[in-house]
Length: 268
Ligand SMILES: Nc1nc2c(ncn2[C@@H]2O[C@H](COP(=O)(O)OP(=O)(O)OP(=O)(O)O)[C@@H](O)[C@H]2O)c(=O)[nH]1
Image (cartoon, rainbow, N blue to C red; front, side):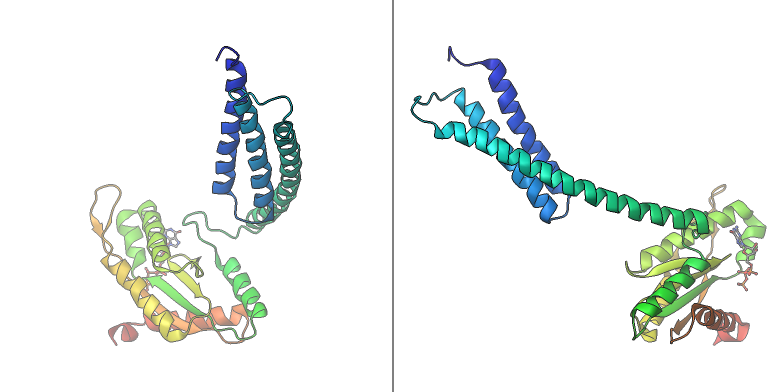
């Protein structure tokens, strides 16, 4: 114990333990793949080198034995090379991701695709998505649900525009909770929402539409100021997309929801 060096044990053992923490953080935050393998291997070898260095402080090997020097120096050198190579590729990966993000942000800023109130995508974004989906798949089998709030004007008149805004925000959250990850919810205009359901038949879409209108109907929305219950209900219409432009599809959807909103249709 008289030859133990506290500073060396602390520095080398601490460095070894820290590499384990780095390893844990990398494995927790990165997807599996080549870059993660390189970083893991590099850090793993560095840990072996530091651990061997720490053990050196406790175990004195005869001078004739040299493999422990190789274990320390070889692992450390190879580990550093692999780690650097992994970091180099990680750097390129980050550049590609940043470029992609910039493109997305530019899209949002320049085209003002997103509605600030809800904040869902707007009509233009929906049109672009429909058109690009249609180009990508020859057998396009998507459906659309239109949802229009009933007597929403009365909410604005009775409780004020700000309360109406909060109702629209709550409605968008409820619809979002009812749809799948692959579906897209947009606020077409005012109190009208549209859900795009890729690869979904009309009958399945009708089931989704009923589930959403039921959820809205059973939702007990309380006003912000006095906490009174404001009833929410919506009318829905479902259509299936054919090989038509987004303009044609959306005007067909608008017609369908207008028809569903007629008093006669509501009584049926
Ligand atoms: N608070 C709020 N109101 C909005 C917004 N956009 C549109 N509106 C209001 O939404 C209401 C839509 O009115 P209508 O199209 O007559 O709809 P409705 O009262 O629900 O009538 P029906 O659809 O026939 O049941 C109008 O009062 C608009 O002022 C918004 O962003 N915030």
